[in-house]
Image (cartoon, rainbow, N blue to C red; front, side, top):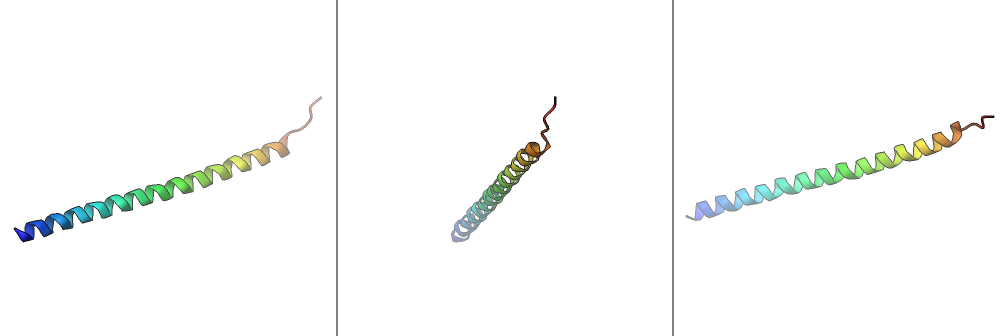
Length: 56
């Protein structure tokens, strides 16, 4: 009986470890995505301003 309880606790602990790792990895990827997107938008805004010419 005690071995079953310990086994169940180990399985629950491993599940929580895996879920935590996945959430941390997804959070890191979201932060990287936001930084890259902001960089692309800033680059596009800067590049767009320098390419505008007055047409007459």
